[in-house]
Length: 182
Image (cartoon, rainbow, N blue to C red; front, side, top):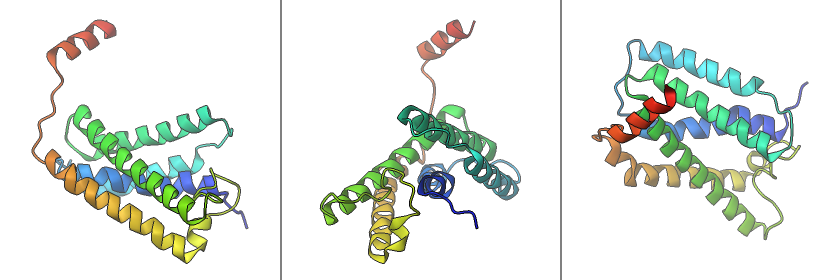
């Protein structure tokens, strides 16, 4: 049997699910493209395949940052595939979702550090063991509590305000981008 490391599990499944749930809080009201359900199934299969096969080539923090940014960019591409909205609006919603995911992740880590008196973190900074969070029922409950709580209040405070917003690029910014492009 092939055993996944904690980092492989986290980046391939847990992070992607956390990220997409966070993003969906802000994308839920966007205009959907034709054949949305089919696009969603195909897109999710593609996203999880990409995240699973993305190599963990180094323990270097720059490489890890690149890896998570790359995975995030794939979710922006997925949102463009699913929704008939501007890239600016979709990117904003995805950044908001990533922010909520990261806040929940950090709050969960702080809680676990406080409960274990600094001896353990949820991810063990992506150690080689396999998901101690889900092997301990108490920490599993803490994990779900923080994620549900933070995602709910993130949507309640910020997500509802996005429902009727119009996203437009300021003319000066568009002009500068045109100059750079040419």
